[in-house]
Image (cartoon, rainbow, N blue to C red):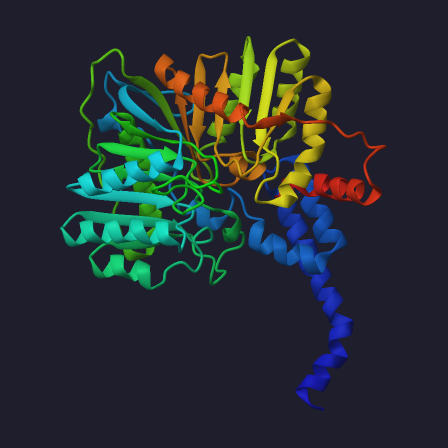
Length: 464
């Protein structure tokens, strides 16, 4: 009997047994993991009811903090002992530093000009990590500028997420390597040597210049995020330039990520040098924190939750995607029902229709509780910000969704100085000028198919 015929004969008998056996093993593993109950239930249903789809998806996307691959990445320490001083101190969630200077970038033109200027001014080193480096005119321009600095003897290190910038290492990027710059990929997904690695993405955006200045925020590198001239279709985003002790923490985060990406090459992490303090009392107090599989607990989520629950007057959240966990959702509902002003600003239509569908249930609950929901448009809103009581503000790379808060490698910055809070408040105020109020649609008025789609998406939100 030919091999093909033999396999065709036995596969209908043993194929389902093998499939369900593998599903059983994965379910046993899933039950040992420290996941939120909603995520566990969602994976259980997917693996049990549709094993031919659920099993491969779990193998690719199911990993979180227990992944062997993440255990190889040492817990991140953004406060090395030699960097602690009168201006820098540890907090329960991150590191607080005084004496910083900030320059906020409200538009893509400001962000582009600032990035080009800092690249051109760098004399010693340039370190950039980004989720997306687009293969467009903006991406090419930035790589060309980096190549020129590398040729001039400046050390250039570019760290790209292997999924966000998948397939982007083409000729225009090889120009940087030929010039002496280095490009590394964070957690490549091929070959699939470890379960779940495709789910663990580095979503941080950091650009550091000479160890003295740094740009952080929500912007990737591409025409959707920045450019030399205004563009009607450019996404609304937010970023800032920091100079001062906070750069030490950002350097520590970059160095830890770079070291992990280069671990197979025997790379040894570098010592983070103390940045000169600025005694001017008018400078900024900033709390930097990393979040992800390389941190203990979920510090960014816990910090966001704590400032929301402690709010006395108001909470405003700006996020491109809103898929919270139950605790965060209930915290906002309770604040609104107890008379606090709660406002959520999201895009009317994001670049991911499935997340727009998944958020519907959460928006409806918030609206019923009295939360003001504003839909920004036209155009995509990609910026992230939180403002509480006009006394504390936050921005960074994280969205208010389950992936950013519990899975991705993320970066957050919290601001306590009045000028910084006013800058973030001003940006939010500008967004509100281009919004419309969310109008709730009751389940009785929803089309049947849309209602079913929303219910299914609600069930699967822990997997998004």
